[in-house]
Amino acid sequence: METREFEALLRAKTEELNRLIEPYLPPEEGWQRTVAEAMNYSVRAGGKRLRPMLMLETYRMLGGEGTEIEPFLAAIEMIHTYSLVHDDLPAMDNDEYRRGRETTWKVYGDGMAVLAGDGLLNLAFETALGAFGRVDRSDPAALGRVAEALKVLAGNAGINGMIGGQAADIEAEGQAGSVTEEQLRFIHRHKTGALIAASMRVGGILAGASREQLDALEGCAQDIGMAFQIQDDILDVVGDSAELGKTVGSDRENQKQTYVTLFGLERAKELVEELSEEAVHKYLDGVGREHEFLEQLILMLAGRRR
Image (cartoon, rainbow, N blue to C red; front, side, top):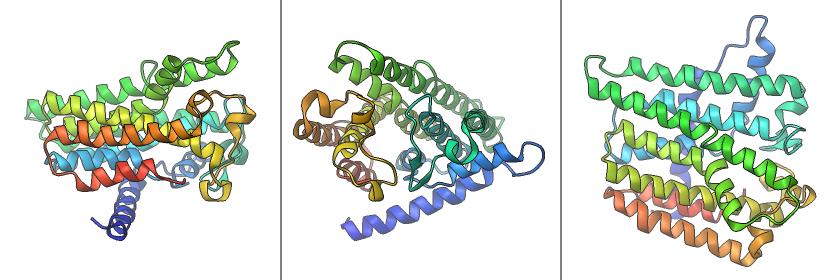
């Protein structure tokens, strides 16, 4: 697939996901109108829609054809967005810009931003539970797949997943000694990798993937998550604020240790390429299905500038 064709397809798929997610957002009405506005402001800020895209493409790659995936697409984006809303708070990274505009707490205040994040997390599970209504309730296997997918989504978003990584990240910033590679790997695999892993695993589960295929998807997703976060660290050093849509240099300002500070810029770039190649040629190839778009998506992320 040529670059221009891939980019056009990527735009079309992003627009499709925006259309699928929009109906699940809360109505802006009643006494809770402001928190609903803050939630919608956060989700509608745009972004790559990487996690729902990985979920949907995995589902389709493995032959999934139903609509039970749709509530999960909205749910994973809500969980990801809530994590960003909280990550930007003064108590966390204290960022004022994301995706080219003011962060949620800057617009609505930090108290309302906390509630908006909480609201998105809760709404994610309300939404994902709707998948039970999209399958044949007389089919135990179909119901079991939805239940298993919910368990993965919840586990990877919690203290043994994304929140655990975020907690380790906060503690690493305040520790006296240097952060070790083992610490950094744990942070990245949980803070960033867990939701990417949930995306691909949920897509695979709902499509009826085998255990071997699910293990391959897990390995692929973990490599993607590591590569994505290391590239994020690189862009914080060499990126352009206007292009990124957020402030660069915050890691240095917060005296945060990253793969760049640990290994240097050039080795960090090499790691991104190595992990991306492994994700495709070791793990994704092991799924045994046609995956041209997914392969190009993964390799594109390795060279992204925003």
